[in-house]
Length: 275
Image (cartoon, rainbow, N blue to C red):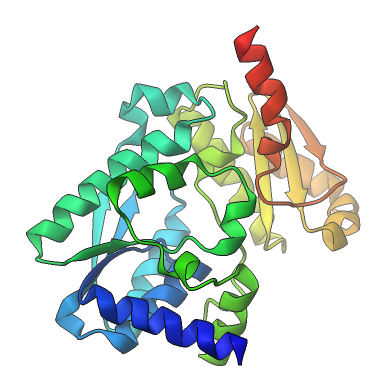
């Protein structure tokens, strides 16, 4: 019953918006929210916007286009240029704030252009556990997060997505490629390119949930704990593939994949910045 109450609350929040522009990445969360919006709002009262840039894997863009076509919603792609923002490129711990501020300022303008009353995103309760400076930018700009307001966790979203028979119900979590780079290391097109090449290679040989953390010449691979032995068994193939992607030294994190692992040493980073 509690789950049904949350779902009803979410639908009511969407109805109360009247019309929405949704930031749509094509991932699990935004696909679920977009599908819910499509079932609640008139077609002309909903617009999905996907931001395309060097920080966004191209396979994700194709996936977003396919999903939007399948459920029949208006969908537009905008190109963004994070690498032209010096504050983003500098890669401080506030990087995500600068990126989200620029993006959602633009989305607010598009919402006004198309006569839509609300700009919404697909943040959820589970995101609150990690360090997310981008959330501050959203709050400053008055962007709504219906999944947070309705109390939805990542687990809730997967459960309901499966019930709704959405293709994305078991899609691995995805984040901006810049999130693979430790704070303080400059973000460049070359850095993002080698991360994408490395992760695409690992997915191609069978690893679905993967992160390649970039330390210039060295990378640290994260896969789900249960697949660590499998990756070790493919050691030589992985080594060859990641060297071809641009890394001289290839390491495996024995702790396995976890969200926001680069934030684990955030306190140490901030202490170094102050000293």
